[in-house]
Image (tube, rainbow, N blue to C red; front, side, top):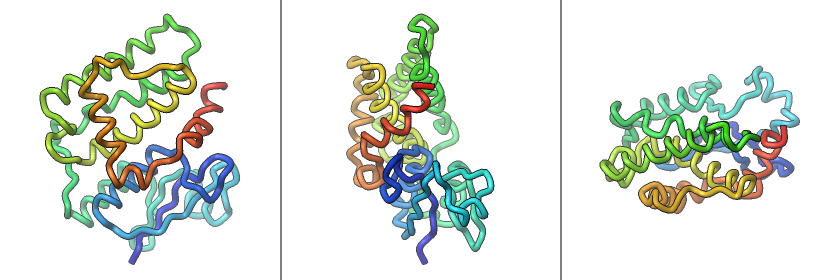
Length: 212
């Protein structure tokens, strides 16, 4: 039985997978665990009535477990790990929060209109910390194999690379070689290639937030 999953459709292309990093995190988990699933693409700017009935807040991702629709990628990934323990994607607790502040720092810097507000530096500090961690423990967050922490961070770094490159002409500094290798490795992973949104949809997804 395939699991039903509601995910964001692309802006302006309702039948194409959209650019939500939290949806991609769940899709990556399904792919890595080889769990069959059925995609339901939701146009978030024109939500269908049936979707609002199962998700009154209108949020994605949403997965159906035993006739119950469950929101929140953290919760969904936890349930998937419990129900489908093989292969295990558990991140050792001491590494679980590695890179967890990068996404927030990226969004603050992306929206920033003031070059001297410290938001770029804050993001750089988070990326440097990730680089140090990978240098000591890599190639992935918990060592040799991909775990849940990578499946959460990978999509966020993909958004960071595309959105900052497009809107700020900004790239991750070359000297953070471990971060560059990490991104290259995750982005070329088979499950990632299969579940990522096309670059133009990532740009379209962030445009309203940048121009707000």
